[in-house]
Length: 279
Figure 1: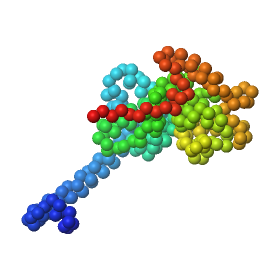
Figure 2: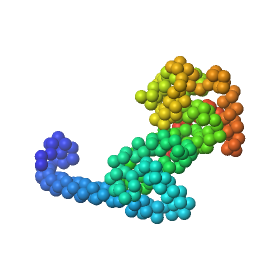
Figure 3: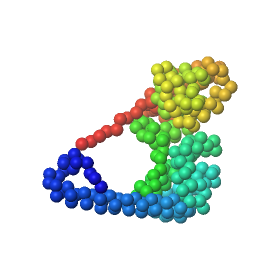
C-alpha cells in the first residue's frame, strides 16, 4: 500500500525507515480489517440475544432491592403498554424501535401521571446506559431528550414535576410552556391559538420560534381544539386573560406544599444555570 510521501516525511527522515513503515502499516491495516469483521460478527450475535435474558441480568446486578422492585415494575408496565418489545423478542427489536421515540411515546401516554411517566423513562434510561457499558459501546442508544433539555435548569426536572402536581390542568400547562421553552410570562399568558405551530412542534413567540417536546404540543392541541385562531390559549373562568397575581399565588401555594426554603416563581422556571467548570 502506497503512503503519501508528504505525510511520511513528517515522521521519517531515512528511506529505510519508510520501507519498514510501509510493511508495518500493511500488517496493521490487515489487523484492522480482521478486527472489524470480528466486531461486526459480535455485534450481530448481541442483537439476537433475547430480551428476557438481558432484563434478568440487568435486574440481578442492580444491587439495591428497592431499585430492583421499582425497575421490575416499570419494565412490566412498559411491556404491558406495548411501549417496548416483549421479553421473548431479541435485543434487535428494541434497537430498531428507536429509544428516542419510546421516550416521547411514554410522555404522550394518557394513562400515567407526569411523575409516573418520568419514573418509566428513568428505568429505560438506566437500562440503556447500563447495557451500553456492559457491551462496551457495541450497541448505542439515544439519550433521553428531556434529560438533555432540562439538565441545566435552575429547578431540577423531577422537582418541577412534583411542584406542578397540585396545580390545575391549565396552570400545569402554563408552567410547562414556561419551563420547556423559556418564554416570558407575558408571552405565555398572551399566547393565542394561531401561534402554536403544530406540524413543527413549536410556538411562535414575539421575537422567535421555540421548539417544544411533542407531548407538550399535543397537550396544547387538546386544550385549543374548540378555539378560534386568535383566541387566547389560557383564560380564566370569564374567558379573559389570566392575571399574573393569580399565577404567583398558585405557585406560592405549590411551593409551600413542597416545603421549599425559597418559593418557585414563574421566572425560576425559565432560568437555566450554566455548568460550573473547575480547574
